[in-house]
Structures are given as structure tokens and as C-alpha cells.
Amino acid sequence: MISKAQIKLITSLHQKKYRTKTGLFLAEGPKLISDLWEAGVELTAIYTTEHVNYPEDLVHTITALELKKISALKQANTQLAVFKMPNPTSMPSAGVVLALDAVRDPGNLGTIIRLCDWFGVAQLVCSADTVDAYNPKVIQATMGSIARVKVHYTDLSNFLQTWSGTVWGADMQGSSVYQVQWPQDVVLVMGNEANGLSPEVRTQLSDTLSIPSHKQVTGAESLNVAMATSILLNELRRPTGK
Amino acid sequence: MISKAQIKLITSLHQKKYRTKTGLFLAEGPKLISDLWEAGVELTAIYTTEHVNYPEDLVHTITALELKKISALKQANTQLAVFKMPNPTSMPSAGVVLALDAVRDPGNLGTIIRLCDWFGVAQLVCSADTVDAYNPKVIQATMGSIARVKVHYTDLSNFLQTWSGTVWGADMQGSSVYQVQWPQDVVLVMGNEANGLSPEVRTQLSDTLSIPSHKQVTGAESLNVAMATSILLNELRRPTGK
Image 1 (cartoon, rainbow over the protein chains, first blue to last red):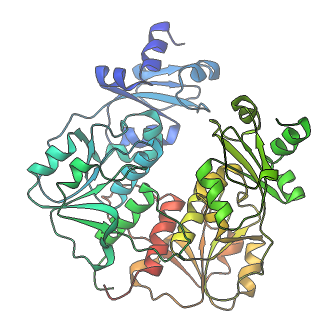
Image 2: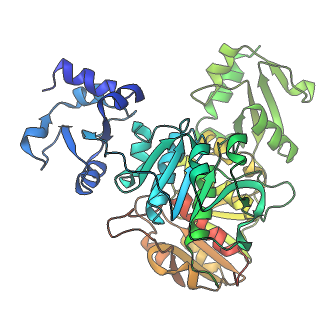
Image 3: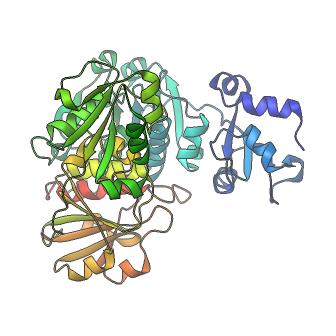
């Protein structure tokens, strides 16, 4: 059974405004929910069409039709959970940080969070106009990595100003990533899908990096931002000298 | 104006069966259409709501409502074109080849075709159960790269049997990609999104390769197939000794 008030709360969480207000977000599907739960994210309620092993007072057994009503997915799964957003942590001031300058596509952000998790980049700093990491589409695409990567939203060029290490931006006209030595403290900034890095962020860069293409003259014009991130993080983390 | 017969033909091309039968496929949006046109793909008709500079006998000016009716996209663009599939070319027998073993997601295939184009991998061999490269969602995701990368569908393990060079498969349990020397003639096989490489293909492999993760013990379990492809093709193409 699900009450009208519960339906209202859950569907409101499809929108960023209410996620921010309540500090809650949605995750759907048994695997994702158990990954978040095991990573220690605070579960406040689970709505399920099947038997589950979560604390009884959090479990609401509902019908497939009811689940469809509250789901943020095109195809509802068998479980939907409401989680509490982790408390904000302080901004990073050293180490390896990835930053996003107005990345708008939820699938790209979700994939990038998953890449950070894979490559052990614990801190992701996003410009205020980057898509919300607690957007249900992003959460689904992170595959649970949202529990392990700290995502910050801030005025990106202000943050870069306070950063004492190196700041590199990804740009088609940059130096070849194959030629650089990665510093210990570095922010790598990835730009918007259509427009690349913003002028405000560009003024804060120590240098720009590119991924050389092996295309013919008429080849692909660019790499998608998630692809470029995967290649650059691999370059950053791979052992040198090979 | 658009006739009922034209509507019927175009909407039939949303399905693989009719694309195979007619040898035609759809592309939508001014940029993609002009990219395919400039790459020399044969245009048979263009349906547009705006003025365009293609040969007059191919141009049909239609309304936005008519375009919406024939579009394969959720949000119709201003132009839809019907192109002829390029003639099949012979299977590769040397050089660098990427192979896909039952990759099912159209977005993944489109991204992988774009990566092949970027990294100068001219030949992509797909198992018969890999998603169709002329699926409208794939075509949109390739961003025109479909015009430059040769995509073959075949019995993949038969193809690998005839291949005289090395065959490597991507697998979580494989040797570190950072440790290998890439041979000159190599097929790199990427597996299905959920199940990885099939048993039939595994019997044909010289070795398996993995991308070492830098995650904590509880980190991301895997990389998406398009991410893994981007990292492996970068490893293949990057200059060694750095």
C-alpha cells in the first residue's frame, strides 16, 4: 500500500527543487538499491513489488501499477528506494580532482561519476550549471558509484582560483596528453558537450590538454565528453614509462 | 508535401527488416545529414521544414507535423534524409580490427563507431546478434562516423577462426593492458554489456586484456563497454615509451 502523501513526496523527488529542499533522492532497481545500502547511504523507505531483506519498518510492498506511478524511469523496475543525500564534505584542496564545466547530459554525468570511482578520483567538482548528480537518470547511470565519489556544486572559476596546484582543461587545441607529466595536485576540467570550456574557466587554466586523433582528414570531429574523460583519467592513472 | 507511400516507406525504415530489404537507412538533423552527404554516402531523398542546398529532385519540403510523423526520434529535427547503405566490402584479414560480441545498446554501438573513426580503426566486425548499425539511434550516435568505418556482420567465431593474427578479448580477469605489446595484426573483441564474451568467442582468443582499476575495495565493479573501448583503443594507438 502507498498513501497519496507518499506518492506526492516521491514524484516531487523527480525534480531538483524538491530534492534540494528535502535532502532526499530516488534510486530504482534491486542491484542499485543494494549497492547504495551496502555502501552505507541512509535508506529512508523502499517500495517494492517483491520480497526484500531491508529493515521491516522501511519496506512498503506495493503493486506493479503503483510502482509505475511513482517511478522516474520509462520502464519501472521492481523496487524504488528513497535515500538521504550524504552530508556535504569540504572542498578538496590537494590531490587529483575532476571538474565539470556545465556538463548537461545526465547519462554523461552518471558515466563520469562511474569513471571517477573506477580510477580512484574521489572528488568531483561541478559548476553550478552542471546537471544535478541526484537526478534519477544520473543516479541510475552511476551504478552505485555516487555512494563513493564526493560530488560538489560550486562557482567553478572561484574554486579554481583558490586551488594552489595545477589546473588543466581538456580542449581540442591543447597539448598532447601523451607528452605531459601529471602533477600530484591537479584539477582536470572537462567542458560542456557543445561549447567546451567557458571563458571564465579558461582564464584559470595553467594549460590545456588534447587527445590526439588517428583519424583521416575527414574523420570524427570530436569525442564525447564521457569518452574523453575515460581516456584522460586512464592517462592520468596508468603507470608511466610503458 | 509527402505522400502516403513515402510515409510508409520511411516509417518502415525504423525497422531492421525493411532496412535490409531496401538497403536504405534514415539520418536526421542538418549536421548529420550534411556530414554523410559530404562523406559521399548516396542520398536518395531529404524531407525538410527549411531551405536546403541539396539537388532539387531529392528535396521534399514538408511541415513540422509531417516530419514528426516520419521521424524515428523522440524530438523530431528539421530534416530527415533517406540514404543508401554503402556496398559491403570484403572482411579484413590484417591490421587492427575491433570486434563486438553481442553489443546490444544502440548508444554504445554508435559511440564505439565514433571511437573507431577517431582512433583510425577502419574495420568493425560485429556478431550477428549485435545491434544493427543502421538502427536510427545508432546512426544518430555515430555523428557521421558511420560513413568512414566499415561495419561487418558475421558469425564472429567463424571470422576469428580465419584470422591469422592475434585475437585479444577484453575481460575483467585478463592481463593488464598496461603490460602488453600490441601486435601489428590484431582483433580486439569487446563483449556483451551484461554477460561479457560468449563461450564460442572465448575459445578463439589468444589472450584476454583488462583495464586495471584504481578503485577502493568497494569501488565500481566494471566499466561500460563504450568506456572500456575508448581506453583500450587509446592504449593501442598511444605512442609507447611514455
